[in-house]
Length: 397
Image 1 (cartoon, rainbow, N blue to C red):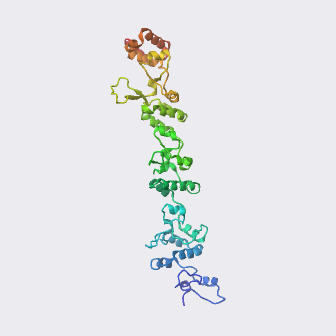
Image 2: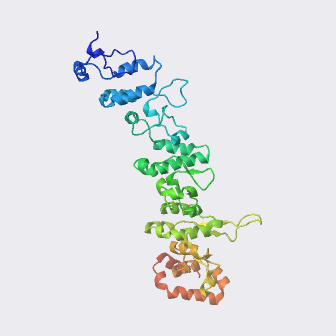
Image 3: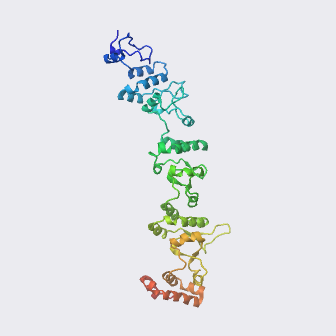
């Protein structure tokens, strides 16, 4: 004889040695339950037998699935934190894992080398067993941080491509609510530079962005640039910082032409900054050099150089003002940045006062007088600079 609380209904078959109540006709299970006879095995009994018995975890899952609606919250929580389930290919050591440490059987997940729960037969997502595993926290998809880490550390391009394709395929249903490209600090996206990875914020989809030293998303991923959170173009602040470093002479034409195509992105504040930057390369005419050495150069701001033209006024000042010409597209940007065709009367007057003899020797008397006439004709714009006017009064020019 047993107390009802120590007995089980005959339908409870998880363990063969359980004391099950057998009755004749006329005694219903409802009556036995009212008397206190147990309708499922207490989890403590299961936990006590995990380490000392060889048993089929599939049988346990089927049993728990059949009684899952009757389990108390405390019992479910205990199941969640208890290592009960083996993983595929780990049958030899008998190690068990929590459900939350394992993934559902899937060829895609298996190809990533992830720990898959050991399961015989076909996995059906709508089954009672699958619902139980889901309640216990089994993983149906790879967590975002693991996806990023797998892509970042992939040993070959094919594996990385599979991981990134998995992310794209599951973006709307899984990752969109939790993915913040601006917060990703691990480079995991391949770029056009061999073996160079970038974060979503550290590369761009437009191939011409490489002109200004930016990383460009690999061509095979550009159609998914929006999913990865990769912007099409570098923001204007990035372009301004690039100009701050000065442009190399050999790249000036393509860089300034690129800037011309992007100048609509600059704000008034950006233009104010650009006009003060020393980024335009100009050669040092009198610097010593050897045949094998490159032409020495310096960087100057847009306000100190002028465009080369064929006008007569330009000819008289060419030797005294730095002239540049990087071609039509590039010059469009430079003009907006502050480069002018001719020096202003104020700039001309200041240079005449600074080196009058040099001007006179290079342009002759008539040419020099022509320059004086230009200053005189625009005296109103010169007179406002009191320091210059006082200097003009005190030097021989």
